[in-house]
Amino acid sequence: MKSARCLNVYLFSCLTIAALLLTSACKKDKEQKVSSSLMGGWNETGLSANVSRSLRFYGDSVALNIAASGVVYSLTKISGTYKVQGNNLVFNFDKQFVMESGRQSALTPYTGKLYENATFSVDGNTLTLKYTTYPADAPVVTTAKFTRGLIGYQSIK
Picture (cartoon, rainbow, N blue to C red):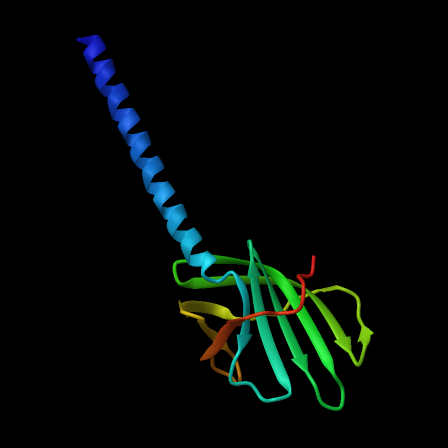
């Protein structure tokens, strides 16, 4: 009787562990598929002619490239990490590099907030980000659209 009870406890424990392993494995596969749809370079659309903004996702790293031309040419590269949680995209930008008219600045910490409370969707070659901005006193939901493309810059490490 005692060995039958031990066998039942053992079988129940094995089945519970197997169910947990299968459930967690399926969740990881789903998260990888979602984040892999972001991989590569994205160019923001709908900006003025003298401004460009691009995002590049690779591994768990992300880089934002902002270029502005006019009287003074400036290039800002901001990098960090990101996490995908369902359709939520959590950015943690932590480094920046700025160049104006060919003069480079040193790599410095970045403490600002970009793409706060972001959600995303990918439809073919279009990435849509919805995030919170603060243009005045109240938060506003802002939408940015990006097209998949080639980007000629590297990450800031």
